[in-house]
Image (cartoon, rainbow, N blue to C red; front, top):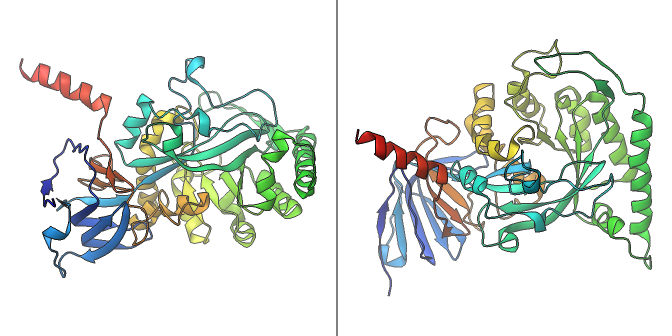
Length: 425
């Protein structure tokens, strides 16, 4: 028996356990994710897919055609934001070694897979979901080749259910061309890394062996080299973690030498100085944390804030990521990093794209995710206000493949508990 319901969403969210085959979201301000907007939208969802997007001001609907109708008037609709290159789900308390599962022993570990280590029961995850970050690229750390990452949804029964794209790419930590240096409280000069050539050569030697292995038909099975095969013969990404100009130049030459099909720069602090080279090489960039200090003393103090705009000006495909101290818990601030980039040059929808569709394009999942378009998965969220502003980001609804995800956040529960207690006094 069909039912027609109009649901008004309030500030503390909504939890629905039922699954509606046909759902209609009406009157929301739609941020498509590809740069377009629709101030008053009507989004039709059937069996987890978006089947129609119309202007609610110029179209009508028959409530009997839909199992559930949700009125989100005055609220904003966004595609699920993506946190790439993150240890979210791989660590719970950074200070407790037993809860850290993102680094293995050894230097060359392309066969180590984060997918099976992902913890969907993490308490940190629910605090990140609460700000509209629905995906994470669970990424390894350490060594010359850290391992293989996977793209995960931040809600699921187990790691299999949460998997969006398994084994999407390997992570190469390119050696630094400099050594030394201090930190902001104790700055110190840097010097040339005298062992840089040898460190670079060791990575090249491993890739030579892996390339030769991938060309053979009847080889003896090698687990490490097998993990590299699709980097040469398929669409498996190679994520090069590099920031300095010398590193970036060498990575570009390296990709040409080994014919790496899908290279990605992770970090890319100096990428704005090599725009033409990167654009010609078609290498996208996962920019480092926007909320950070400059790398060098003579750099403008606001350079990290402006880097997204500088890359956008040069036509380089980029997205934002959050690698750094306490990165798992700080993944919740990803929308606000995009908001800072917006304050320093990006237009609002360009900023939204930098944490949604652009990220999905770089990861290779843009055929289903990253934007709210007909034919794609209905994976989205609704916020009472602008999701890029910490003052107005207030998520009231989350959908994964058309299914409503419970809005459970233990931090908010504690806040409400003690707010109620002390309001009585």
